[in-house]
Image 1 (tube, rainbow, N blue to C red):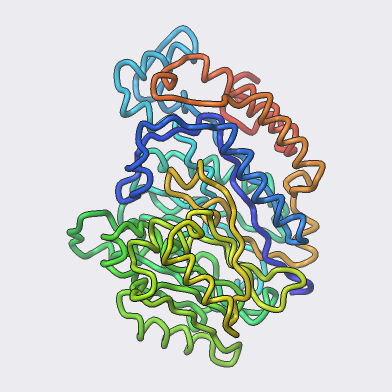
Image 2 (cartoon, helix red, strand yellow):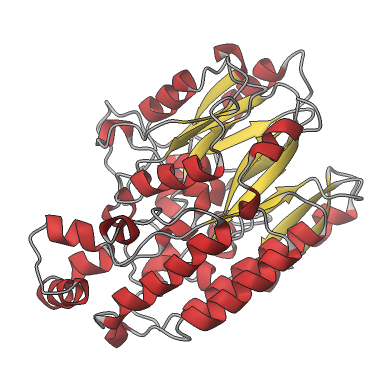
Amino acid sequence: MSGAVEANFDGLVGPTHNYGGLAPGNLASAKNRGSVARPRDGVIEGLAKARSLADAGLAQGILPPQERPDIPALRALGFAGASDGAVWEAAYKAAPELALNMLSASSMWAANAATVSPGADTSDGRVHFTPANLVTALHRSIEHAQTGRALARIFADEDRFEVHGALPSQSHFADEGAANHVRLCADHGAPGVEIFVHGRDAFEDWQAKFPARQTLQACQAVARRHGLDPARTVHIRQSRKAIEAGAFHNDVVCVGTGPVLFYHEHAFEDRDAALAAIRKAADGLFEPVFVEVPDAEVPLSDAITSYLFNSQLLIWPGEGRQVLLAPKETEETGSTRAYCERLTAGNGPIGAVRFADVRQSMRNGGGPACLRLRVVLDEAQRAAVNPRAWLTPERHEELTAWANAHYRETLAPDDLGDPALVDESRAALDALTQILGLGSDFYPFQRAGA
């Protein structure tokens, strides 16, 4: 793959960003349930983080938020009204918990949008995308159809891209996307090893405090449909200990890029077998580099609350070693700050840690890595991407002005039933489709009004 790069496509924080506490096992989400959210700050923070990567010379794109509240879903569930705003008001009054699930801006966490395999790994040489069905949580299970639509608009060239449908929306194929997927390689354009991490086998009896969201069967199905070489594909089980501590996705305890895998001591159920399987799959391609964080230095609880591993591990232009882009919370937690200082003082593969302020996302349980979907693209594939999806300085300015014009400064619990949210959100999204070149029929409300 000539001139291949790992591009990051960040999900924009949506106009209805709020703290509904809807995700079982997500400790930050549960802790902040009912707090006052700041949607405008959220989208500005996310854009600033993305802009810092683009300014450094990294390929940086944008994924649009979804239409919320989801009025078509509410109508399908029997709610009615003379207007869509009236439907929302009626649903929020009659069934507030259900309504909150239809209001969530959770599509901002693009790491859950899909699993992506680059052409260097697939049997047909195309980039393959499988939108995640996200069946474990109601508020996320309604995302995959629109996610597929967004990917198809941004990666529209069928000679270079294949956007699959989601796996069956059934618990045996529970799929949470790239948050449970890591690709290691010598070079982004060279064949690599794709690592799929599952929490449970669908045919076992899972009994635990928190759900194991990803099944082995979902991982296997995605690998098959992407045409991956079984010899270069590794299936690893996440540790029960990590899940029960609040690591609801593998990316809360592990991140990797290039040949480097950065992970917590308790990330995997059988660490030695996992590392041996990766070495075997990489044999003849590259030598994996493992950076393990001992529990004695960073307790699992600190790793999860600080989101040390929900950071972006990046091959930064001009840097001899990799850069970890971590949330401010990693800097503010004693054990992780001290570990990062020791990490970068040595001669290991990670040479610098930089910190990003994404507090609005973090309070709902999503760090810098949650906000992005990684897509490896060669020169021809990159040229085939919808050009409006790339974040340029001009696009950043345009999106910042858009957010300032359309987003509320705050959304408190008492504001969530406001019928005006429907029209406000739609006005923002209608303008966004023009900025990102998505077409006038991208969102359900646009198609309904055509």
